[in-house]
Image (tube, rainbow, N blue to C red; front, side, top):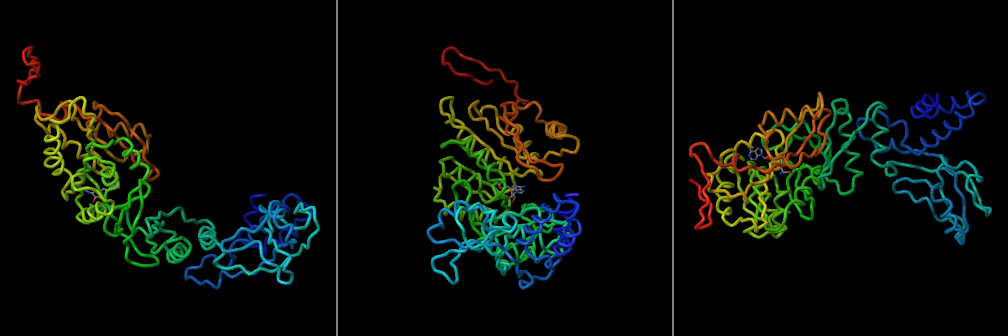
Length: 457
Ligand SMILES: C[S@@+](CC[C@H](N)C(=O)[O-])C[C@H]1O[C@@H](n2cnc3c(N)ncnc32)[C@H](O)[C@@H]1O
């Protein structure tokens, strides 16, 4: 019953008032709840905006009657303590105002869902309590309330992301007829927003930047973001950027120390590479998208990164691993002894296919080229299908990619990307017989007493 009444009251205030009257003799409890619901609705945008598809600011005007109490100036502080939870809370709305006809008084404007008579106020001094008319408008509501009031009651906007000055939504088919209203409201209400864009399709293109439609605002999608104490400039139409990965980027950065080496195979505009180089790691950052390299260079300068700490490559990940990573690690390998403490990290964030690049490491080096202290730690991102169960999906990934017998140090569940799909990170320490050639030479390790060196034969 309670549910029914609340729903009715949301749909139509007038109807629910009539309903209250009809039911009043029988259902006292319900009436109480219903009158509260009506009062709460009073503070929401007018019911007339529901279904609006062409933005009309005038339709948001609404005249309501609200309780007020006039308080003498000397009692304002104490009254504020007592009444602060009962004041009307709306955007751009001052609930304590000067009194029009008496300079020595302030008017407290009260929430009708919490106050209906002077007795509700618990004030121990007598003050003038009365109802006044108030004109509310578009500026008084947050975007959540406006969008909820505009959309049919069974629809809602699930979420949005902010990328600097760009607000990004991913509208379901049934919301598309309201897309321009949603765009307008988000642009008006979200501080610093210059454009609202809607993702048109799933990310399918190679560079992982998505097809979008500008719903409201500027079609120039250049913006700036901050992440892990670094500043990044980017053009959202040219490159991939996902603000939801900030914490995961931070998790990896916490594993790095100054002097470590980072090979960032699918670097994007540098959320791993730039902060890592800034903290003193030697970084080789690669991305196939030339625009990513352009923005990587801009961000390198912006974050004052020294040339010797960050080198940028624009190649397919497989070529980068087989040529540049290989040559660099070989040249470094000699310096890496058991007491050097330098770790080699490889980030591979291209979850749709990145795991397939692990095979580029198989037998990449000659046995002598790599020491036990220069074995890279791979941070591989991939998607797990959880239709049957997470455990089942994970097992499949490990078997299909031949990772079951690797030295897996961590499997981290990064985030849900769809109802039956999770993004995970597999962090594994490579083994020498995985990344070095062993098959064409029969190897014997000879320890010679004279020179105390290990020889490979
Ligand atoms: C999911 S984004 C990750 C970007 C960044 N590392 C991050 O964590 O936000 C993947 C990146 O891989 C790049 N990419 C796609 N295919 C590639 C390939 N075959 N070789 C190198 N980079 C590739 C895309 O251009 C994109 O910038």
